[in-house]
Amino acid sequence: QTYEYAKTILSLMVKEKNPDGKTLIIGGGIANFTNVAATFKGIVKALREYRDLLIENKVSIFVRRAGPNYQEGLRVMREVGASLGIPVHVFGPETHMTAIVGMALGKRPIAVPEEVELTTANFLLPSSGKKGDVRVASDTASSTIEKVNGEVLKNDLNRPRFTNETRAIVWGMQTKAVQGMLDFDHVCRRTQPSVVAMVYPFTGDHKQKFYWGHEEILLPCYKNMADCIKRHPEADVLINFASLRSAYESTMEAMKYPQIRTIAIIAEGIPEQLTRSMIRVANKQNVFLIGPATVGGLKAGCFKIGHTGGMLDNILMSKLYRPGSVAYVSRSGGMSNELNNIIARNSDGVYEGIAIGGDR
Image (cartoon, helix red, strand yellow):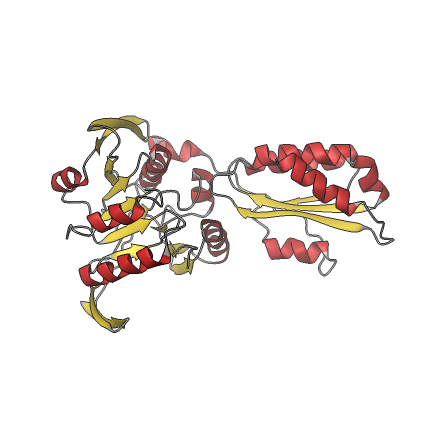
């Protein structure tokens, strides 16, 4: 699919000549899941086919991408440029997207890519570093009063939403997301996993195997939410991976239990009327809703929701394993990754970040 799309773009580029040449920008944000090297395979194949026409049309190419396996993808693009004789300028997360646009348009000089320190999962090894102290912010105010849609709401500020002791329940058989949360917990030097259990109504009660560093652990998976809530009173966060068909019902059920203080709703496409209904109930129950259509959020060095922050190399590169002092709100997972990267490179790092969701 990427190959066909790239061929279409290249065919349009070489349709008419420009005496000054042409510029192709192959750019993207810091991906959460997309295998960058695999994506570039189709683009590379198309570039090889159009080599002669690209040279004839004096096409120069600017590449900027990051995410899973991006180092390999960028290496391949550099080699392709050298082998085909086409000027290809390759940049990673060390260069912001707007910077390469300026370079491509000739508004700023073409920079030499910075040396990037490679980050690997070796950080997970127990001997890779000493256990550090995790700084947790303390709130001095006891509560605030605010008015939403004409309703007076009281928000308790004595308890932060997320700490290094926050425990969560995951709705849905999302083993990859859970393992990502456990890996984050481990690099943050948490003493215990942030996920206490999973709820999945389509199977019976059972246990699911995960890794805590190099150790294997078993997390319980329940068919019924009521059983899960009863057996894990310490959990106050629900991460809801239910589809748009069942996200409303499962969220409304979760808000019946007073111990649940925060619910992240991942599903996209939930009707606006149902979302408004959930918000009304959440306001009455003093439950903090994140989403719908969200990747979640995180508190650096403490807790992350689902796939927030992307793969482990993104987590390490953006130094999300320890708290900084900058907070942000975004509308997408990709933009959250970009903000994590920018903040880490220009300040002491992220303190907390929330993606509020892309749906209206």
